[in-house]
Image 1: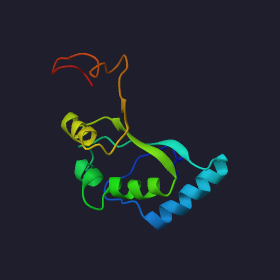
Image 2: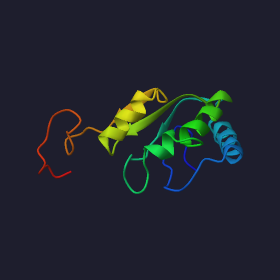
Image 3: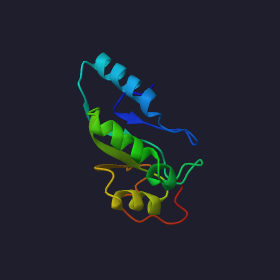
Image 4: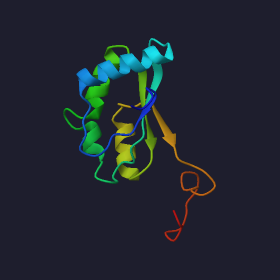
Length: 121
């Protein structure tokens, strides 16, 4: 189980609300917290069989996370803005996430400036 502040969901998996409730409650108890502020989804959109339809589709991850948030497990949902840029923009535009963790560092500065098609990412 991942700590309650982030998760990466393998392709083809879904969030079982009943099972998630139990795991969330146990994780929060271990942390001595009633809730966490931000739940961060760390899947690269458009890669390894995981795409925006898994997140925004009917009965998808966002629907399940909305139910968990309504139960007070966390206050906000965010995601790591990694993968297909169009899908990241679609998720942001949906209004279903409160934050985007932008992948930017010395080895991959593409979030801060244009890089050529030959840039070794």
